Length: 331
Image 1 (cartoon, rainbow, N blue to C red):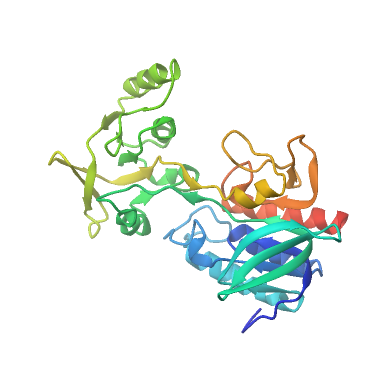
Image 2: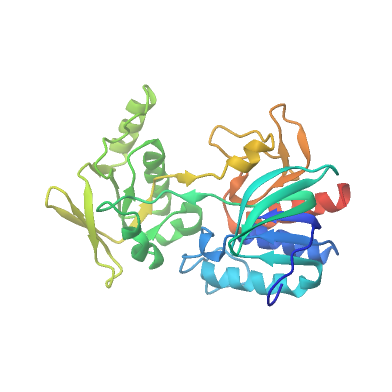
């Protein structure tokens, strides 16, 4: 894997995705003396890549950035380089059953179409956060996210909110529930910025009325004017400019926008079932379940793409469970 890797025709395990879960799956396969091909678009596509500091990673009492943690995992994966390959930048296009009972994955690597076979296939493609559109662009928010002024995961960053004024970006049920959940961490105030959309637009009764009442009882207000710009990055503040000419200032922002892409195309093509939120259904061994809730032989889903909690330690655990099950059943 160090230097320029050579693609073999087949591996024991093919891993699609090279975030925290995918890299751990490749490492665990190598440690179990099995070959693994890790197909990765690149570290910058991992949800944690731009996270400046994560405090929930064991062994890093001062915290660690998502970028640094991915680099450490990739370095560790290279310790088993004799048993597999890490291919990046690469993008999986299609997966299907091959004639040997395993899987064939078609992907692009370095601009060229490739195919590879595996006895087992682990889907670790993750999900993509929805970004707010500000001034017609989605990248306006990036500097504030990179500076940890705007966060995306209350389980990762909610502990940073005590005594802070917080703006939740979003307008729907998810945004309202996020705002209510953040109260657990003791912020000074929480306000919802609906980005020009009506609050709870599309939420049906009686839930709509119930949520309005809960927000009012919790003193969570909202601003319905469109957001046209942001300031305050040097001061690590979130200063929001609105279309009506007003502005407001907050200590922290929190995304309540949900997900943009759950990468459902490949699992759907392989017969996977999905939960109501769009995540791939799996059993406790991370085996992908079909529409009848039966495991699909040799097919696994790990990390954020599967149903369950979205945390890096959980991603590692699901990767290990999938590889160990494949080791015991198929390899």
